[in-house]
Length: 271
Ligand code: 5RP
Image (tube, rainbow, N blue to C red; front, side, top):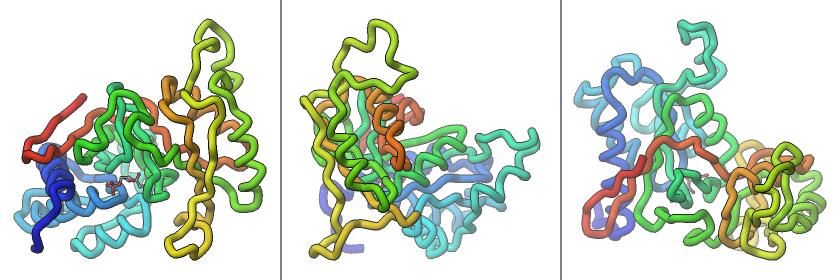
């Protein structure tokens, strides 16, 4: 293997440590995230399988075409979420995945996460919600106190292509005090949910001006810059309420732990 950059080595260390800790022989159904850090997780997974250290009937639930391909290339079996529920002896408990390992764009001190830098956050959120445990892996650049502190590319929002302009303008009319109806009442309504006076929503473009990025689900992505996010749940809900928004790349309290690789080879682990 060619020499890795410090950042890639840090990602690899975190990915290997998290896989070693969580993909025990008892794990029968594993969710596999998307992104460059997950590539290393699947590399380790393939090694463990070869060494006979995984469940003999291990199946992996992918979160994107990329992860479907990674899983297949590693000689592992894929499964659709829809096919899993009958496997659940309790009769269809939604948490039918034992553990999901996924990357992140940023993680705050309460394990709220921004995801969707790879435009896969819709499936990633669905898979995370069906998992008993969501384990986040990344390098230390992803480790923040407040969302928006380090990640300056905005919150990825998957939207229907037929209305992206109107969704963009509705998002840009939100204010730091905007609340989804369910959260509107009470003293919390007076606190700013985000830093900027108004959001800026940019349609994500493919490289070399090849047009808008199209997700695996045939939708577009708006990257919504709001500065620091003081109330991730309020921002997630306010954006999600806009008709035509399919999924918001803020994962509130879904992750149970995060592993961050440092440039010196050490790993920080947060629960
Ligand atoms: C894809 C994601 C990725 O997990 C996130 O962008 C992190 O990617 P990477 O590991 O390449 O930094 O959310 O939608």
